[in-house]
Length: 138
Image (cartoon, rainbow, N blue to C red):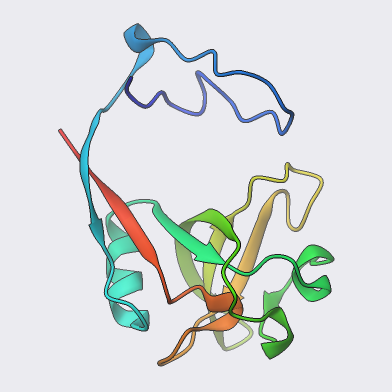
């Protein structure tokens, strides 16, 4: 099964079964590449090519109650328990961040997104720089 465009198969944020159809697929994933762990530069380079699957710790209050701005707190932790998609990066009020699309729906965070501060080294905020990978498509 290939990947459909979000406009054709939008995320609904509810439990259910997959309704994707092969005929609507726009691309097919052949394999994946790992991003070098603990490297902000390598993670940004991968994100510049397209969405990157990143793993974070999301069970802490500071993450779950996020409503906006750049999350830059060690309270987030680095014990990975949630996979999300890093879809961009930028700077807000002088602080660099990764733009991450969460799977909890548009009522959470900034319309379903969170800005997680980048770190020059190490695991990163919420452990975002530990385990990441991106697809290789046809």
